[in-house]
Length: 87
Length: 186
Image (tube, rainbow over all chains, first blue to last red; front, side, top):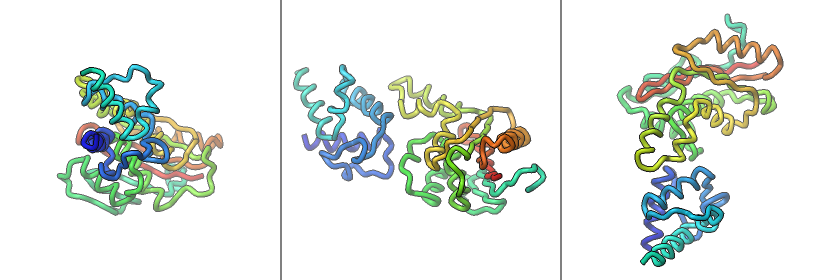
């Protein structure tokens, strides 16, 4: 889980072009939107692309988006659960 | 008031990796520096406080930077947000970004690129940064027709639609770019 979260942080910084943020600046439980990392709706779409591109996961229910993308930990949990389901 | 009959209170030109304000070079980098590196260096020099800059396409970065250079020097003060307008033009519209987006479609279409596939997005970025809510227009023409932009601006000022305007030319296509932006006040 720790490795996955570290990888995700690096991927988020790269995919979202966060040139003034280092992966280690992103806390595991830091909210990614609004007052946390300050991501916006376009970034949310980029996160969906990131999951498809790197983890071959499609978000079947868009309403779950806010829950899945709340923080790096919630994304990692979602990926892990999805991978276990498919094994 | 100059020969245009307008009160031009400031001008910025960006070309050949030089930034001129009111006809004086205020900052430059070597001419062979690639555009993305020039834009990043200019951002670091003039701002460094607006992370969204890095997500913009080249057209928006150039416009945002030109407005920053002008308005840091002489802010629009005393005008309601609805009284500040933007009148811009260029040759290639958003083609530079359209092609990048087209390229991204081959794998995963990029939402971050897609939002810049309209030429007038640069006006949105400048407006968000400075809180402008006035009239705006974006023209596309083969060459910079300053007379057209000045006449349009004059008309808006005469009608009372706006009291201050940023007006000019923001062109980028590949590595070629040119910005001429005027600050006009009633």
